[in-house]
Amino acid sequence: MLNWAYPVAWPELLALSFFFVLYVGFALRTRRLAAPLGQRGWRLGWKLALRLLYFGLLGVALLGPAYGVTQRPVRTTGKDVWLLVDVSRSMDAPDVAPTRLQKAKAELATLINRFQADRIGLIVFGADAYVQCPLTYDQGALQLFLSTLQTSLLPPGATDFAPPLEIALDRLAKLPPTATPRATALVVVSDGEDFGENLEPTLRILARSGVRLFALGVGTLEGSRLPKPRGGYLRDARGRDAVTRLTPAPLQRLAEQTGGQYFELSERRDEFALLVNALNRLEGQTEQVRSVSVADNRYRYPLALALALLVFDIIVTVRVIKP
Image (cartoon, rainbow, N blue to C red; front, side):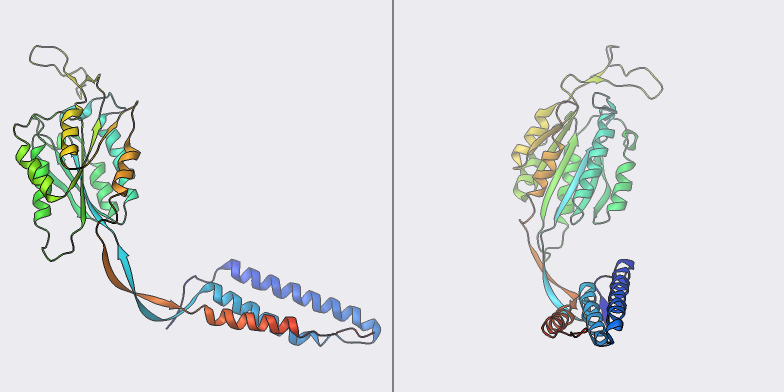
């Protein structure tokens, strides 16, 4: 079955019509000039047919006629990226406008668009953790889940980094053993406030798994008060306004022990582009080779015939008006 790499559109039809009109005009003008001399311009007729033919063949070659199917090897270097997003109450702090969580969501939306050839999953955490979206190539579904993130998704409590990391490790362990291993990265997005008790066992397993962890600290060292939904600010046990600050040390430790990197996101220090570049550099660690069926583009045949006719047109000249 004959297919076309590019559909026939109005530019091609317009170019062919323009050529035909100009050449017919040239032929009529030549005939008008030859008439007073008692000569005829009919000799140009076969040149018109010839030029229409090879001009049409050039157009066919540009459209890419494809006939038949061939198997070609395709090399892929995809990876799995888990986004671990902190949705604890402190992520509502406005020290990064409009809030820490809203700013992180906007940046992660651009990250998802940059890695359309990779599988990306979403885990939310606070005092507890769960999978918001499993690993998927479906960018639209992932963007939808990302847009629904808010601090009310989980019950209030002390933030703990261990549960989301354990979930990611559990999902990694459940991959089929016969499958070709893929490069895997974890991106922890948080303000760094970790109140968990013992993270070391999870970190040791994570380091042995070969997974790279990249941490994105969202917030400022000065911090800010936490506004209530109905006005006012949260207060601590002593009755003072509760202030939440970026705590980079726990995030830096996570990144260092897994061979990853730590980045910050705030009004003064926006390192999100560096995070994207670091994830880009992971490509190529794992390769898969598979065969795909592709249509065989046979543009060479009409192109070769058109060039041959063009050379013939140049070599063979026609004298229309004889002295």
